[in-house]
Length: 108
Image (tube, rainbow, N blue to C red; front, top):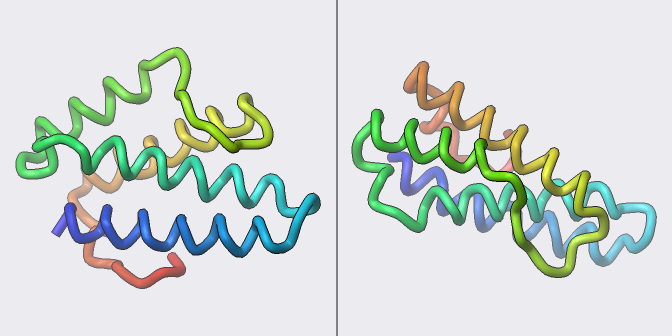
């Protein structure tokens, strides 16, 4: 269920990035927000940690503890890193409570 949720969030983040890119300069923050969500979900989906709750929580904690997050094409590095950490905290809360992963619709 977690892998499905992560895959759907990656797809939704890509669509949000494309929409923000079409809107132009005034949508820079929305683009960075969507890019951060995609980065975080892709980093979490890349490992085999999504199968066990404790391992997944440890992976999230390790990612939150990183000093920097590398990505290309973003507008503001500080804003991007802040959005990545906030998204990782959101997923950490969902993991701890073990709820919210059933919501697979694009808009949450």
